[in-house]
Image (tube, rainbow, N blue to C red; front, side):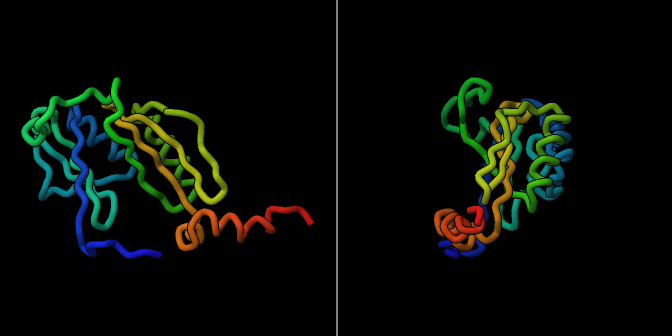
Length: 156
């Protein structure tokens, strides 16, 4: 497996939201928490990994950072955000929680054998994907994993 080019580097993805409290409630129902040191009435810091965070920002606060007009994620794709979970069942559970919390399903589940995912739009229309990938496929790469497992899938 390759190592990060810059160990310890943190990633912050900033997203504009219409209603910060509703967005926090939505993502809380998906199992996310918020770092209180970087959360106030205009921003919420949502850890999504050891060194990765999503900053939910009111549109006004986001505009302080943006140099261009803010696009509407309901009519234009700004980015697609994906996070992993530990099992196929957890993919389904998180997706169901997103829909129950007011999210919108994007399409049917995608099952590639080594990877399983579902996609949804959050309350503001940002596109999210929750996925599980077989740890062996992560280590070997999808092609090597498929080749190694091809014989196991072929009936004798």
